[in-house]
Length: 418
Image (tube, rainbow, N blue to C red; front, side, top):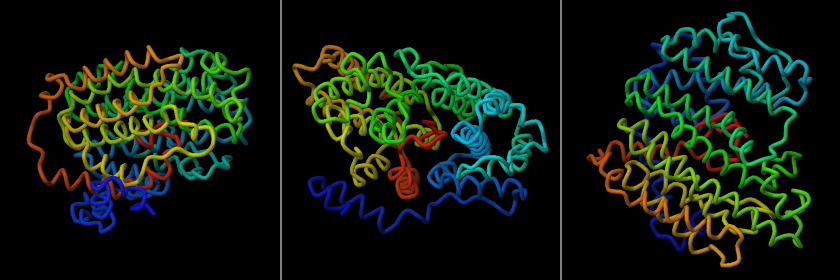
C-alpha cells in the first residue's frame, strides 16, 4: 500500500525499498551499555518505552550530548505526564507543575498517583533524577531552567484558552519553543556547536513554534473529537461563531480561510529556521534538527487549503517522508526542500483567499532566503557516505514518528508537547 501511494514518485519507491530491506542497519550507532550505570541503562529503557523514535535519534548524537538530551527528554516527559493527567485535581496539579524543577534535586521524590500510560517515569523518578545529578553542571543548569519555565507556563494555561494570536505564540513557546531553546543550549554546552547557537533564543524558539503550530493545524479534527481546542480564537472567530463549526460541510469555505490564515502564520518562522540550521556545524546535530523541520513544511503544504483537515487525517506519504529524512543531511538539500514545498503552497493560493497577500509575501521572503548564497555556503562541506547511511538509518528507525506525529509531548520531532 505504501508503494502504491508513491507510484507517481519513482525516487520515493527506491527509498522505500531501501528502508524495507534495512540496508543501513549496520551503521546503527551502538551504545556501550556495559560501561553505563544501572540507573542510566534504566533511563534508556524508559526512553525506548516512551518514544522509540526519539531514542533512535538520540543514539545518532555525538559524545556526552546524547546522555544530556536523553535525561532532558525524560524530565520533560515526566513533567508533561503530570500536565496531561486529567485525574489529578487542579489544586494539586498547579503546585506540581510549578515546583517540578525542584524535584530534580530531591533524591527520593516520586509520584504514584498518575493514571497516564507513561506514569512509570513519575513512579521511578529517582532513577531519572540521579542521572540528572550525574550530568555536568552546564547541562543541569539548562535542564532545570527549562523545566522550571515550562512548568510555570503549563500551569498558566491549565484553565486558560488560547484566545489571541499572541497567546498562541505564548502557548507554543511554553510547550515547544522552550524545548528548542533548551536543546540549543545543550548543543552549545557540549561544545559541538558554537555558543551563538545557544544564545540566540529567538531562532531556537522559532524552531519549536514551527513544529508545534504545524501539529496544532493538522490535528484540528482529532483535538475537536477529544474536547481540546488549540486554534486561537482571534483567528477562527473571523470566520465562524464556534470553532467546531469548521467540521460541518456547510462551513467548509470559512474553515479553509481560517486554515490558510494559520498556515501563513506558521510559515513566518521558516526564515528563522533557515538561519538557525545554517549555523550548525556538527553533522549529528544538523540531522537531529533538520529532519523534523522538513517533515513539518511538507505537512503544512499537504494541509494548505485541504478540506481533509476537517474531515480526517492529513499525512504525507511514507515514501515521501523516508525520502525527506534521507535527503536532509546538508543545508543545500534542506533549502531545496523548503523551496519545493513553498512552491507547492504557492500554486494552491486562491485569488479569493482572505490571507492571499500575506501568504504571497511570506512565500516570496522564504524563496529569497532559500536561495541566499550566504546560507547555502555556510555549511558547504563534503557529506560523508557514512552520514548519508546514518540518515537512511534515521529514516528507518524514526518510523514511529511518521505514524504518531500528532503532537505527542514532549519534544524534538517527538518533543513538541501538544
